[in-house]
Image 1: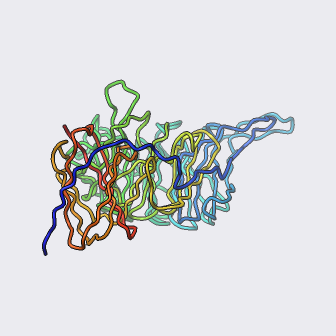
Image 2: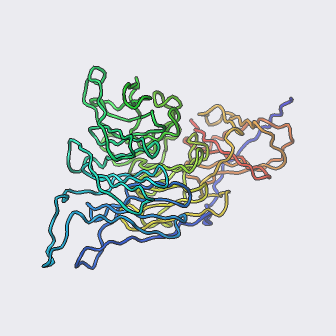
Image 3: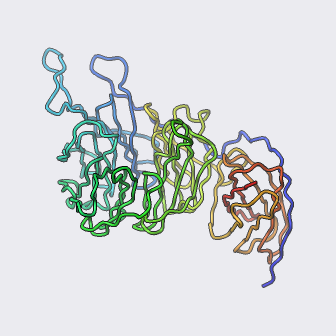
Length: 471
């Protein structure tokens, strides 16, 4: 088939950002818990949330720095209620005096997993966990015999592969359950293979046999994995990039967090890597130029393609529509739209999200009204096989090739966005049905950095690819 090459010179010009939103963040819940005799509520913190589907979500709540509660929605965030508010730390005697119980050690919520509509487990500080087996109606307090007490770097992770088999980790130990969290057994590591102390930073259990962990072995961050529930382990030969992990299956996963810009700096670049071999090797997918005050902390996917990742101390959220291969800044998530930044967020559908404030009682919901974004809005991509960009990185002043793998015809818009989603330039073309490859000449007026190129066809198809321009 004949190929037609179109030579296009793009002149970069500034376009004023639009103030029109494609969707809106709104507060859908304010959760208050009051102490006895006090007129002001406890501080509220949302450490984790899990959604079984687009309607049913359960958020873990810490109140007063040491209490555990939950918030539940069964209608996609329209309304919320609680079935767990733990006050077992103390009770009031007949004179009104507060008396601390044997459970007075702190039990602030840490993590949550919701493998099906019956089982839910909320982990808390000091090895405590709350377990429900009746659709979150009632809860039982349990405790794992861990070697430490007190706060251990906010790390008490729970990952359930189904409603029977799962794993739990604190900084020092990994535990397995095969009875739905009724009991946990400590995993023993072969000291001939692990010759130094190990410290856990994140865990994933994508199926009933596979466990993947990011750990420190001595002072080196590594990925370890087992496919027989801890009997045999494989250690990555190379140091891991960053410690937060998320896995779609036992081979395909993401590694996300931040890169400190310089020693002693309080600013980070947002970093995401992707793996197809279970964490043994990684491909860089995001390394931002914008600087943020914290690393990427939370990740959520509503399906195998559409997901979000956010940091916890500022307004920094990125979206993907191709399973993590490319990421685009969500610029609807700003302080102007959301007064209190999120600790965690959840993607319900490609057009619906929930956000949970960091040390505030607010729960937000976002509903997208359109799938096309203009200047100043996030860029949404659809079919990821439609569009190739090469060479990438590309030197300013050279030609950038854009290859369309499917038949595009008629009017198309070609747009360039900067790394925060601002439209830099756009141009419309009329293509015939045989056009497959275009050439951009990258003008020397363009600054070096990361950009995104979008092609939008008149039938509504749109594809986006990240590209780095060098000088």
